[in-house]
Length: 248
Image (tube, rainbow, N blue to C red; front, side):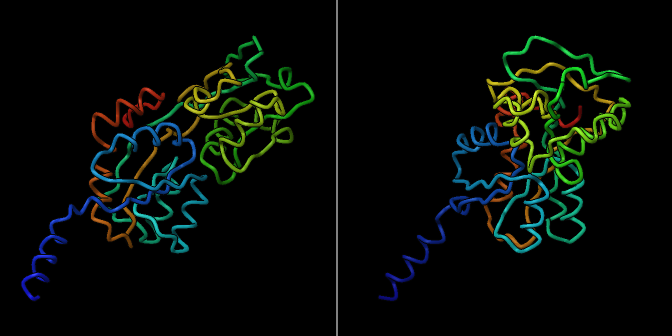
């Protein structure tokens, strides 16, 4: 019996560590791309929870079980890092994105997003859909861009703030808002909207998606999955969905 027990123990220890499911908390704007990327990871399985970055950061702070956090901006990763909730050595910037103005697919106008641009004409009696401008990265980037262009004060009372960037996108896709500010990757994933303008990259903080392993995680598969996300195969898939290199 002892010999059998030792054999079983030996077999158990031979099971690859990366067979454990990796629990990923990821910004909602990553969903289409990250779902595809994760499906190509042959070393194990993943369980991905999507939400706005501040909601995920606060869940991690509250002790939610997660192995990896991928934020849509540096601020929320800095927030969890400041509370010692990540493993600093694992932190990495994965990729970037672009900020765009979208309208329902049936529209034909374009907007040159430059200083002094007047968006009230295109808005008419409607509102500009944005993610929460005080907390959600896409909303913060959007507000910064409008301030840079000198049009925030004229639009501040005409904003339809949504819980996250995909909710803002949906308002435009449904025709409930004539314009919205989202990431270019969100616009590409929704056939019911079209990009009518792209914000200059210097009009807002650089869009960066940082990732890190969670400090409380003991999952041996977490860091191999992070390494996979940094690899060339994953990078090609992310770029196919419109994400840009982190260095841009």
